[in-house]
Length: 132
Image (cartoon, rainbow, N blue to C red):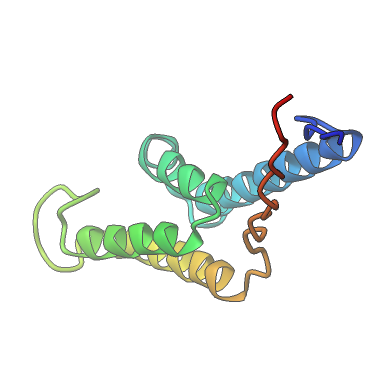
């Protein structure tokens, strides 16, 4: 009886590697462009707080957690706990709105995503071989 060990890397894996990497890069570039140029958020906020956390969740394909992070950021910003000179209601409403827009976009990604985890591969247990 021969047993075949699975290979760690096959030729089709290159396609998946570069396709997945390109998808992540495009998502991060779109998010950066929206935050910096459309919503006019400062670079320190985009590259120091939002993008690292969103990037980590997007890479992990956990869009729901990324949306929750952005929603909490919107609430904290609206009440002045982040990005404001003083604590108060509505100190930086445009930044709070930006957080909400990003949260909505990420929630949409989480809700309508078609990506799923592959089913685990189940192998039959090895057959007993009598000792000689």
